[in-house]
Image 1 (tube, rainbow, N blue to C red):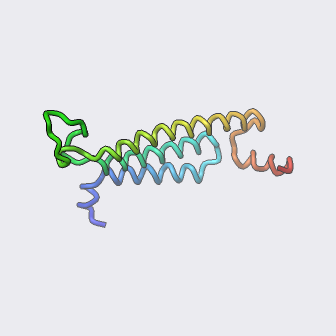
Image 2: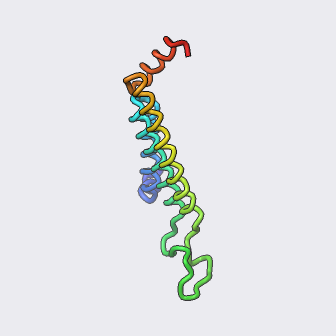
Image 3: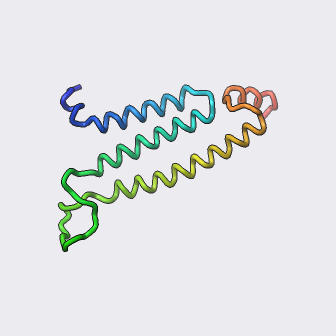
Length: 125
């Protein structure tokens, strides 16, 4: 790996590092709240990466001002739209996961996924 290339693209490296942190948190944690946090970190890394890929130095937001209609003057609005849509979906999924976690805690009085799985097997479900 070329270090000069990494120095020029450090933002993408940070996004990938955040994704790895979130993914490892999702895999290694047993607490459901920590798993949800890991998933949210992964989401944030993907949104950061998409925003970085959609940004072009020297270009403006795609709002026609002063009659400039050339495509070369503006950034592509699709990555920004994907990020905004992803954030809305992520908030909804997080709310649903937290609501289900609350239900699990009320039933089993623990947030440890292994303990919940053990109790489910004992119940025969």
